[in-house]
Image (cartoon, rainbow, N blue to C red; front, side, top):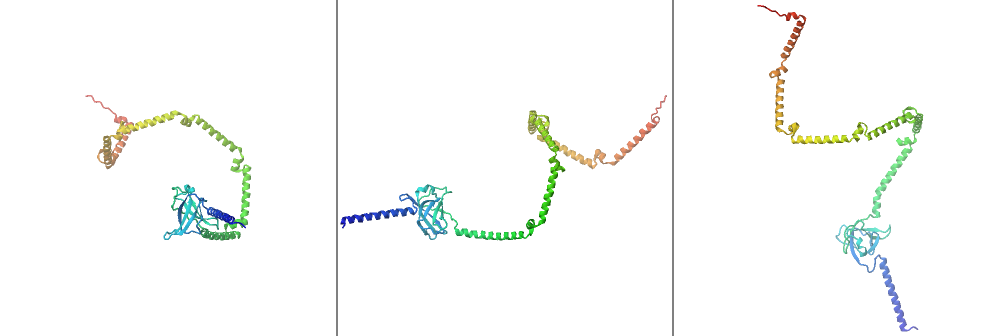
Length: 357
């Protein structure tokens, strides 16, 4: 029979074993719930959703898919609309450098039937590092029901499109319409065969050197002429590059550039002289007195022209009086007759009489 001391020692060992098992079980449960370490410092952050969507306390919190903490509380905050569900999270400071104030929190489901967890997206975050008590913005992710609901309209449109396509195919198979006739009308095949035959005849004629195209293809004369033209063009290009001929001198002769440059300089100098009022052209451009004299002269010429057109004065009568023209014409006719008479009988008009006293 064991002694009292042995019984106490056995009970102590059993108690120690149970205590160690409980501690081990607690550590395992603590690790399995997604925590990142028993003695790792942590910060608390929160976010607000319009619907928890089955999120539970203890659900993992992940940063870019990596576990960094757990959900510690899910509750409804009255008056906080339109996102009344407050989710408090405890995350490890080990990943604090990648957790930013402008990071986004999303409710994500692991697979189709998996649990809901918080996934934090910091891919586009540029803000400062998140600290204890910060509130992260949320980004709604579409649920399967929303996707199915949104796709119903597309499926209905697809079904209508398939039915319409089926009617079109049946219409074509019946030989109706342009496409149906193209597929089932034998006349099209006959015409196509005739066209192929005609085209084959044209190809044979071209191959035999008949017609303009046939001569271009089969005759060496056109090729020789083309090569001769190419040779002449190459020869002309060589002459131009060597500075021969007018075009060659235009490209190669530096005197043309010098002359053009001198001409430009002279023109510029002439322009400067004109702007400075030098020379006759400069005075015409700059001298106001000369401009006034020219204006006065032009005014007088305009008045004189008006008087001439009105027939005033001697010159005006010369332009406008028809009697002057008639008298002058009569005088010329009489003078012409007088000269004619003198030529016919000069003695009658050129007789000299000498009297002696």
